[in-house]
Image 1: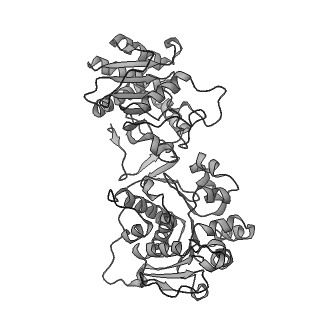
Image 2: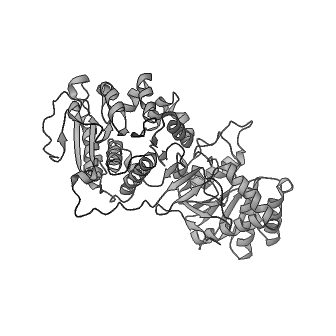
Image 3: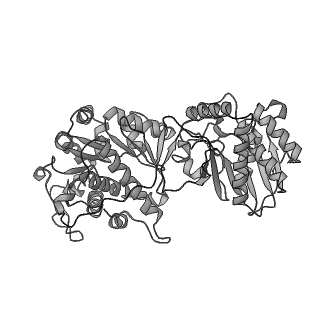
Length: 507
């Protein structure tokens, strides 16, 4: 039987949506003795609770009216029987509980668990367990507002200095999307350490959108059940190291990257050459054999003393079919004129920032992007943030954030390309492929230019990869993972700037 494990950035995991999890739960319950699956869940919760707070003076378990509450009641019975100080708040009338949860309530009662109606006073050594809602919530507005005691208990849990352990999901979080269910958007997101124990399967919503902040440290226990079937996504963890470079290699062995962007100051009074320079630096330090930089500034920049390895070019002097092209970083309004040539001639292409905005505003450019999918020699990666994704989908940023997996998959289908939807838990999707959710990165990346660095690194990985959609997915995924991993390992107290990040990259 597979043991409980802490989810880290070093191992890949399958992620299952609510429908698949419910199907698996029903099959496992039918194959096991009555109540056995819930008893396994309760035992897992109890084990982790004692590991997190072995010296707790109080273990407060808030239980809802469904099977999530039943898991909490099972844990309460075990903890009480082992002599630990347990108290339980139960939202439901015990007579209205589902069969498994009702049996768990009876066991808790027989064990002598103390049931209370108000939250106890908790200190930093104590533990509160959120077993209120679990998988039962949906994104659609509900007929009534959430139970006020539920909302109150959640607020008290989050305001407490005690460690918080959520069973399956933080209450109010949607398992499939990482968004908040209606009525829970403004819930406080508290003071103590946070942990989530995902049972049976891991859920996509724990790792993207609001999920990473809400869940804290994620633990997983499959409860002795082998999760089969097609996952909704995969957690992008533990990317393999790049292949060793041969002594007999040369700069041509690792490909050319051509960066096209950086509108000049003269055009509109908003110089953005720095964005293109950052992408070029990332490609250079990310392992490209040569990096060509075509700034859209009418030749105003003639020297780059700080980075003499970068080779300045005019756009018309670049053989786009031979390079991995990164287009759009800081391109401003000037990039639109370059896009028809780039979209038709580049074989390997990364589109970022203003290139995506220009395409979203021009149906002819959208047609050129879509047509690339029909040419076997062409590989395309687009790297939108939520607002850019919304423009490409004729939607809103809020709608994209409400279903990030759905938005990334829609973009991949619409344009026949690999998509990196940036944000907390970046999504990497491609047509016909299981999407990946990146597990690395943190809020230190929320600074100007880090997206340009990611685009340049993808360009370098794409330059060294064989052509094809699968290779584009791998190049994008590995770059995304590495980009975030560097931020996770960044020294405390040292500013993370995009230029420093670019110079820290390795092939």
